[in-house]
Image 1 (cartoon, helix red, strand yellow):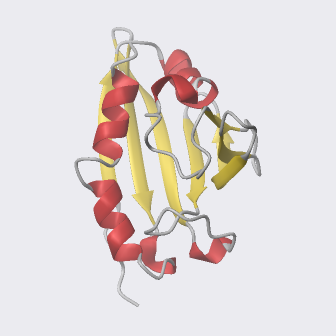
Image 2 (cartoon, rainbow, N blue to C red):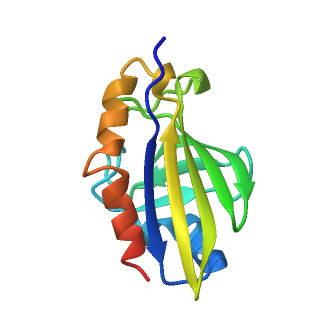
Length: 153
């Protein structure tokens, strides 16, 4: 099987590492675009449970939930790694062997700034991995998501 190139995106935010990590993880809903949801019942909030094995999911106003993945590594305030268990049609695939991975690294950039590096990789397990890589690597993928995150500071 061919290896698909990882997607790398970075932003610098005007806040210390600890605050950047907290906003990214605990205040996910404040920056994640509401129209980037998979729940057919709509979107009200998204969450990352703060522990290895924790869920990464969204909730609609009616209380229904839709999973996105799980937490693989939890190392506040420096690093977070998640499975992305959404296929090219943005449907949840419960088989972790089919998951891609998202790693987020928070680095002190000096003068109260934090560099946030996102690497989305391991697309090979997805039947439509090339399409997922193209989507998350495109203008409406991590570039847009990190722009929303950055604008909150």
